[in-house]
Length: 322
Ligand code: MEV
Image 1 (tube, protein in one colour):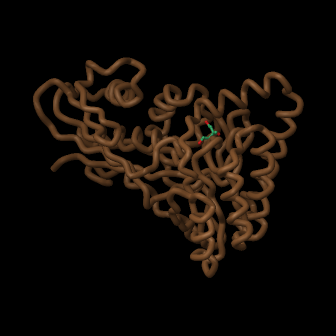
Image 2 (cartoon, helix red, strand yellow; image 1 turned 60 degrees about the horizontal axis):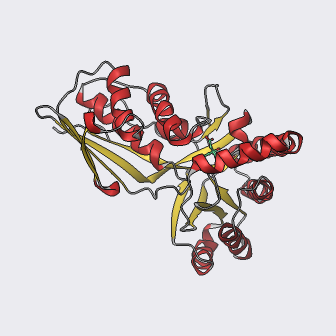
């Protein structure tokens, strides 16, 4: 059987950017959007195919800084897998550079597929640690929230350098994810915030502190199932993200459209400057809110539901699981 594995996308509910500076973030998996990796055994050399990004190469020919090549080499190394031949094929339906963790998701699928090919069991913590190293190539100074939420495939409360708290929602919550259609590299957004913070540390640290307080309040709302107050924390957090310079006119239009369509809350999610806006909506107003987001310029709108209670764990333990 061909070892095949997949990984989810993610959205950050609260805390992006501040999380890089040691404040908490809350992130949830988006299970309906996935990256997939398949390994077919064969003679050397080991070939890598990623048709979505037009990549077809022999592993040895990929430069050291190529994230996919690094991910494969690092995984083989850390998990002691002596694989020198065959074909690894990677596909993804997660929009790239849009704040949904496509890079971390591809890496997670690759780690799981290679582990499965070698008949090894890897848990979420191991996968997350390997993917974090790949994220450093993508993003420079990642906090680790993306690799954590994707590898655990659970809602998490994350603080840099600590084990994540797995969260259980106190009520089911429906989110619309509106893609602004503007691609934005996390690395650039994070570097821009760092540059501005270096010029005015007091102001920026004060804003990060406020984002952290909203994140703590939002966690409590999520666990209590209080959508109204969670939504309020999202709107407030958008104001603070604008204040640190990661907003964009297209994102503001989407947040305003969600607000006018009666959403409980809306904000950019991820690095900002482009990418996605997430909106927490009442089930009965999901249709009009989706139409309003499209009318306000959304290139695509996805729905995701955070189910009430605990979530089943990801299938990282099965050698042929997806
Ligand atoms: C990106 O999904 C989230 C940021 O906070 C960066 C990070 O945490 O590494 C912007």
